[in-house]
Length: 184
Image (cartoon, rainbow, N blue to C red; front, side, top):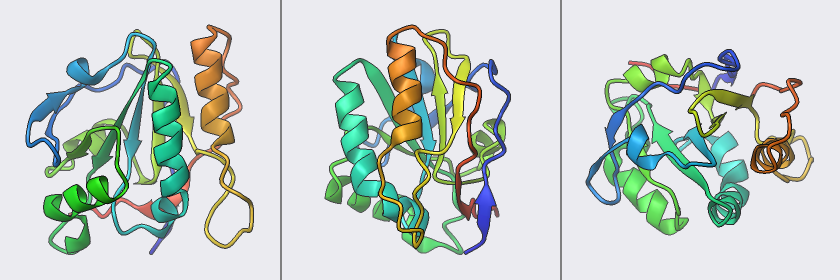
């Protein structure tokens, strides 16, 4: 495990489009199909990363809560499955069902989407407004394995609440930290 910070794509960047397979439904889904008129959260996550495991329960609850408010969520796994078989589509499907993901869990086999988003770690979060321009990128909150700070989702929630109330989102955004994406 190599602790890596997110790259923090520039605010205002248009969300790169994608067409990726959803491991649960088996359908190929596009960003345009999944986006919400209020806002869209694109998350780079995986199955084996202890940083993702640390926030997983709270992330599932946060996604469920904000989906009710009209925000869409998309999870993407871009890890090399040859060297990290725990992140294979078969295991992704098991993980999504086990945790009852209310969002599609997409597999980026070529890793081209992770590169397009400048994703560096898991978890890595991006919020896009209704125009699909980046309004937030960074961490869920300041909690991480072993730092004894409870998982609250504070940073992500503050950005989503501001987006929903059409108020400015603070530009003081902290990078996410976690395992590096496992590049081929």
